[in-house]
Length: 459
Image (cartoon, rainbow, N blue to C red; front, top):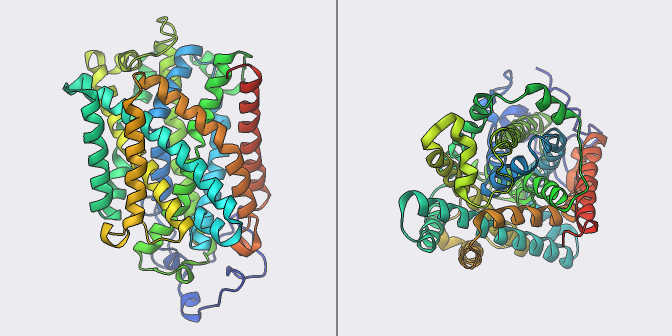
């Protein structure tokens, strides 16, 4: 079977290798699908479930408590007025995550590792500092939300739950194997599909929903612009850029490719499989975000709950589906999404620092062989716990964590575009115009939203 042409893959004369990379006659004689590791056999297109991996986990992690709170706040404050952000964000976030996935597959390194090899030290340090700052605030917000929900559902002190949850996550990440962690993380947030069911049960005016989805009606107000930045920031987040690239590398390590040279290069079919994985993950993520806005816009906004201050208020959106059990269902969603989100936040921070410093590290490594990697993970987690300890407004902190991600994302998006157009890094898999167009649009849209927010006097 001929290898299908992927419109996002540049097909030129370097035959899939990177400059300076030797051609392995044994490797090159193996069918492309088998080399990709995402499927087996030369004559079969990989099954959907077999190609889903890092992209699906990244998409699920995108709907963390910060995302749930932000989308809920948008629906409560403006009804259906922000539904348009979902169809705008989907192609932008899909393109960005696909660039990051391809970067990890082709270079054999994560984003920070590529920056260390190709660019001045200050570029790497700045990127890691941006990531660590955003992740620490995001971890604090997510842990605070989990602790607050557990306090209301199970009792006990919220501050005590902070330590319990942080310790549990660190233990799982340090002692679990990557395949186990990946399998668990894939299914933790299925409860968020409750928002889809709740939206239909609430019986909104579907003509109004469709109009709001495809005909934006922006407003020049402080609250509206802050939430626009927050929605895009929690959807197109810096930690997801680093996580996506690093997890593609982790997948290759799991298949026994221990060195960078063994991991370098990718067949067109392997990139196609990653394409499917990423777009499925991002579509699911955006679908959930859309229905959270829709559900809260159809329930909380008409009820006069325009500002969400507590978890109980946010849980009311699920009452059409769950009735008196709405608070419990919301709690399950927050806890599941939070465990996944904090795991990815801590993991992406540790992976980035380890790659930048050229330390041993990875989700497959044991603590004894990667002490500094796990030390960074623990330090970021502890910093998040300390920050969450000082905050009493968990929902508000979740939204401002999303705003911070929105402010910090544009410069990183520009950096990713530069790296993904570097022939020395990407070879024939350099961006073609669709990815450059969408990636550039993502940077411009987010930068414009941030600028408008500042001009409006939000700060």
